[in-house]
Length: 269
Length: 267
Image (cartoon, rainbow over all chains, first blue to last red; front, side, top):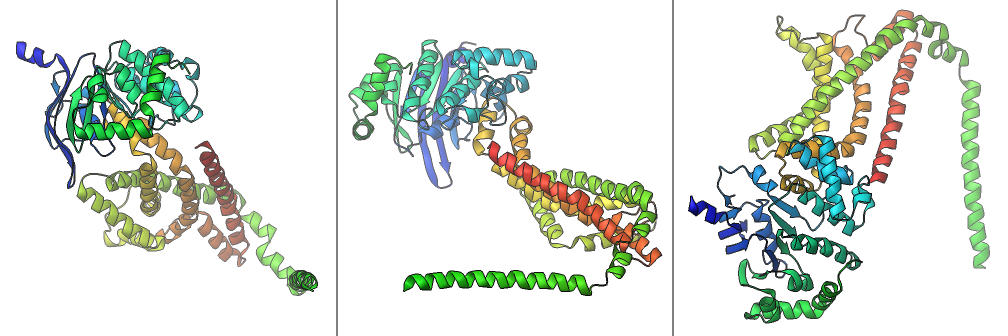
């Protein structure tokens, strides 16, 4: 009885994960763990496999080999009910992927109703309090197209949180946003991290990673090159590939500084 | 120098336009003068003969046209949606069956399909479709329209971005829950205008029911008009039937365009 509970003590545990699309090898043996309550940022250039790794964690991509355990549950085991497992794993997409035909409150409540089999009234009540959490209770009856990108992404976060997941995955949550809208989304994510949510964030926001991540993981060519606390991986990276990447990102995007500023001053823009 | 040239070319264009108007007006005047208005009125706009068909025109012919069309339309929707889902299935034989069906029934004239359905009772004397002519009409119109609707539904389902399914599945919804709550509602908005157009086409195709061999209580507009015209030796009833079609198809076509505009604005 002790062994499974010890496994369950890890929020996410990945062993020997491999994934290829046709002949293109995207993940070449990933070993990766996340403890409960940790915020892990995954960085790396596009095509390094970081989004694919994230999408494997809730089986939006089916791995070719390897094991993925979320809260002790082996997702790669064919006996596992993947729909039940996904309820434990919230996902936030780069393109928000809100349901355009449903109002904001229905976007948040629909899964409660269809999956958790709650009444419509109760689902919407929970949804409204979830919208309050991301500061959008006054937009409950609006439609996604009427919201700004930042607001849409906050609704998407509320939608994922409504299922009370054990783990939240963010796939470049601010990459599709205008620069002035990035802050409001990061603020919501910061609050979530402070509440102790386990989070894995694929991001280019070095400031966010430096300020809030417990660990930063640098990926390149489908492998994890460097994994450690942010001050180490971003501050004084050991590997040359990490150094090259960070030099390019911090110089061109000025992302590190502006992100740090956002972090320091708080982002209630 | 060049200015006068410019002006003269404009003047020439103006003159050509005037000539065109003039020729058109002359043609209309000549037609009005030399046409046999008495014969036209008697054979095409004969109100007393038109009145002869009056109650049955609505109670039988129009009613049957609507019944044939609507039943065929709904059969076509069900079959078309099934075929579209088969086309998008991960099971290869389903895709093949759907593709072959669409290729065959989109390529055949509707008339040929009706003639084949009409020949079934001759080949298998004991066999009869439930609903008799109504069943055969529903089958024929459904088979024809399903091929087009399958393509429409497929396009509609594919037009919903992939991220919608991913977002729904990430929330723990099953594949069929995601289809019902997220994908199909969005696809329906996309396919409403083309489906309305399909309904217009089907109204016109319902006239082919006359090749199934119908009794006097089963006639639709085209056969009704044709029978009346034969009985009175006067084509006015055919014109009346034509007007009845237009009474349905023009507002429907208008509605389809309005829906299309409305939905494209809403996006």
